[in-house]
Image (cartoon, rainbow over all chains, first blue to last red; front, top):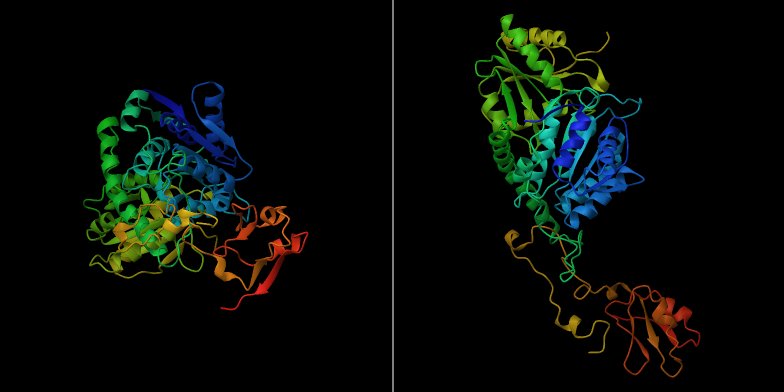
Length: 392
Length: 105
């Protein structure tokens, strides 16, 4: 299989090209810029036949993608942090019109204070927009994620947009080996889009985003939720097919690492889970019975997988590189909520780590393991939310 | 049928969905102006005096809705299903052929 040494951003750009996207509308923002620069380069070199729409803002970028997608095209864009926040209104328009747009969001901290470094709050703040969310651990997952995203999004029972999320700099600008299957194999995996409707059917004109009175709005919300439920099945099917074709299985919405006999597990999303897996190997040599649970898909939320995991462990250390002010880490909040009406009640503690790109290392994970072990032995939390790095 | 949309309006039917399964997957073209009349929002109604009308069609051009149409005889008329009673036509009419009258319901 052809391999390339590329940054996470270039992996995203290659994936968009290999997915044969037809329209890209984007506005540059650090650390996303090199994704759309690379796509512009593909077009300039005649390597890709893509309509590139340079726009004046991220709001317009998403609006252009919505127009293109409603016309039947395969549309792609990318952004980060403040740009994603500016898109917020249009994100609802994309999901409400049931358009399978794929966007890469490079996780970057929200300002102020101004920051360009890794933090998940930008994408998690968009969790209620009706977009699916996939968090990539490494550059390979960025590439694979974009290819799978189109297949899931365009599935006839889904028709919802997907956000593929990668870490600022840790992935976006760091080079790694990425396997890229031959184009004809990708074409077999991802055939051309068959749109649910199209604006270019001039004999049957339609109005998109039509007014729905209180008598009708409710049912359309329910249909989006049904599509999200279908997406859970489709994600697993597509992840399995991807594994069969290309050797990397994504049938699990939560990737489990050494959890079978684990006393407690670290749970988190994105690039920090690579470090956690390294730490799990070391900690196991030091006598800790630990594992890692990497939440790949945050929307739709993998409820069943979390329950299956939670009923077999004594504790879960939830690592949140994000925070919802006035509450707690967002993954922690959601995971607790899922388990409330079940019989799985492991001790759960929330560690707030790595905000704004603060380094999160194997030693930090060792300290958290020590703390978790003590808590489980005592059977009682010392505190529910730990601002782990705080200078005291 | 002498209205803005002619027979098309007379034959148009409102979409009614009885169960969630009857709804389309996507909210497309849920209703049209053919069945959604917005004229009952008004307070004043334009009344045209054909004896003063010079068929200049300034009212027809200015109507923002637009709910003024040109009849076969060349005179203008208002489709009251859509007229919101803004009074622009009466204001623009060079011969004062249009008067705004308070509508009693």
